[in-house]
Image (cartoon, rainbow over all chains, first blue to last red; front, top):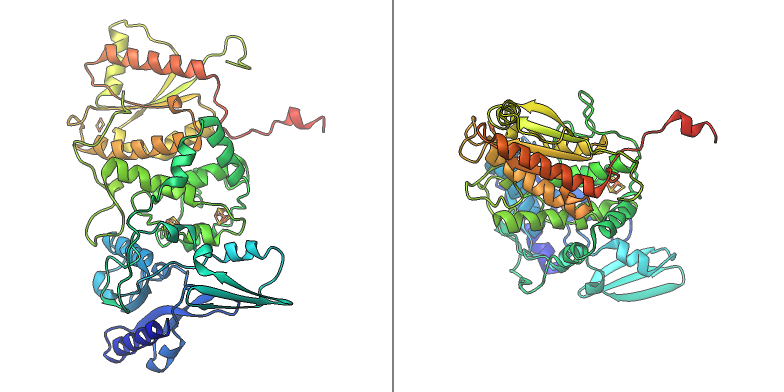
Length: 316
Length: 152
Ligand code: SF4
Ligand code: SF4
Ligand code: FES
């Protein structure tokens, strides 16, 4: 990790001093244990702030949309793919972004650590290789990092950024064998009514804070459909149908674009597993149109495109 | 068909493309072909004009079923409106089914201006299927009725 951090800082310093970029967007240590926070560096002397470890979970692709200056962005596989989607959708010109790719072995899901510790508060935590050392009042624990990775990371097939301009360190082996759709398949196997009750139960927890929307790099619309008032499409109430519709439509809007970065599930204050919806959308698009998002800078999102031979078995 | 009031009839909202299915529905009438009177028709310029919001909103407003009908692939007045729509509808239909909406409530068809008979059979099929399901409940926004609040 230290080696990676060192070369990341060198790369950042070089990009800044050669004036290839005006700004580096990366991670710095946060104020809470296991937290990092986005870090904006525009002076070479500040590159020392930049860090890299398995707690760098923020999705920095969020910050590239609409940028006027040239930026270098530290990007894991999922972040790089999202930057690619934003470039393909003309939200930022390619020449304004330098993707500093970091091969990633997965980020830690703080919620999993917290639930393991139940009510105990973590006061200090460090990630050392394969272990997470957590300390609190009257306890100290060594946890195996791999047991606390984010769900998306467990089935991620692009740990190495498929698109990057510079790579920090060496590529890591990809997970080729894992089935990324197990959760979705289990849900599909249920009866319709069971699924309805399941999603009702999950989504009725939603408090409509819109954190999932704020964190998603793809939710860049100036006015979101839920905020639109002329016409008012759907209510902003906590009526279950309004909440369900918010999530259904958001899922539709990221169809063929979402890369399962997991940011929306991680950010949710009431622990809704939004991945169940996002993965389904990904599966539909994959099965119907053989498309995977974020692997190309040119290809348009599949929902803005068509082929004359697209399947239409559902049409009478 | 539990809890179905006696004499309940489904209400189906149909979005018909002006250039084909709407004319097809006209032909059904002109040809005196019988079909169930449960559909209310909204004329749209093209099936590509039908935003998934319309369909979801219809379900939320309590329509028991929705039908969207456009020109056959290749016949769209705007060349590819129906082909783009086809992808949108496919994803919408799969997703609604996944969250647990009964698939028979959301229907799509291609009906040309010459297919009066097909229009009648599509509508009959949709109405029969929705009838078998009973009134829509899922995703329907609960109206707060004054008379139900009074006794509280
Ligand atoms: S919808 Fe969620 S998982 Fe998908 S790209 Fe947006 S934040 Fe990431
Ligand atoms: S972050 Fe969670 S609670 Fe907030 S709007 Fe999204 S799903 Fe609802
Ligand atoms: S004009 Fe009929 S579907 Fe486009």
